[in-house]
Image 1 (tube, helix red, strand yellow):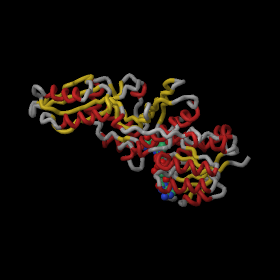
Image 2 (cartoon, rainbow, N blue to C red):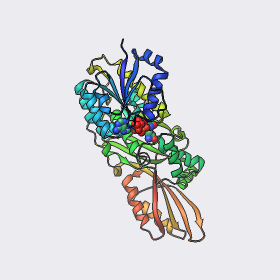
Image 3 (cartoon, protein in one colour):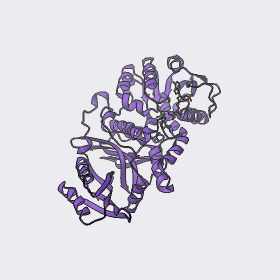
Length: 436
Ligand code: NDP
Ligand code: HSE
């Protein structure tokens, strides 16, 4: 049988990893797929740039449209990133009747509803395993492995750059900017690293996880998003003293009246498995009604881990090339007509506990005034820690851990605490998740 021809757009970190795996493991891959798979042509921005992989026999150009319009190309693999060119090329590939594989979470989170509708109408597949948690087969697990279950919640460390930064701040005592530069040099960070450290990348991935887990349309704009720029080495140290680690989490939870969708740093008990996921590694903890909790762990970024997911998608598409489109696994796990219109809850409605760090005057009555504010809002305090008495200005650091309350209660209490004359500056809030 003739080889399946891949047209690749983008030969950067993930593109190079994909080409390398397809070459190195060609026998195993064709044995699994039932057909030989070859990259026939590639489009890049700069044809003259040296590539870290063997590109012999591949037609390398700089026109993505030529790849998408090439009648010899069976599957278009989009590894260019961004939204504009990627969206145009993916939609054009679909219109040309080609199957698509992409690692682009921004594209799927923001334009997936449109893309899947178009693909459904044309009877082609759009596969996107690499878009969430790099090499971890979380899409396949949620969409197929857990298809018997009602998913209750998923909580994940889904941005490798954030996890790498928080881990090295904790273990090596390094500052934020130094570690971010390392993450960029290692190819973990997005072209625009503010997407990573600002939580946007994790929100893209959470959008996809929630859609597949709960059978809801992709709703990136409804995700509550916080990054890690507010987390200091001090917070990491105090959290450690209290028995917690700070991780950047994406949480999607089914509640009676809707779905929680939130991305933010969180203290989690140090003895949870997920609290011990370090460096660029990702992990997603899923709680489902029949199977109970399951944990998925692996490399969330990097050339070959992500290439592994891209190639797995290519194999899936090749296996299903001749199948009837109506018998394929639906893009978002549920048949298009079965997607639910569950509301996404505002962050203020979500139940969370808090870690609050503040600088206050060290004099009688200050702590009483602060705790009164919490009591008046019916927020129960779990732990109070006083640290770092400063002889010069008479200030101390107070850390308060609260029990669960509605998130808007925490916000209201913090505003009142900040208004006290004995409190110097802002209160730093990091939420606390038990993940029990
Ligand atoms: P890179 O920046 O390393 O590579 C992008 C590639 O696209 C380069 O080869 C570049 O060409 C090419 N390109 C850019 N603009 C154009 C253009 N106008 N025409 C043709 N080619 C163009 O990105 P990554 O490989 O890191 O990421 C690719 C995708 O994978 C993104 O969607 C990203 O979010 C996703 N992803 C990345 C992961 C990672 O670990 N890096 C993990 C999971 C997903 P040239 O080389 O000539 O500059
Ligand atoms: N920039 C992303 C991360 C790449 O750091 O996790 C993987 O999606």
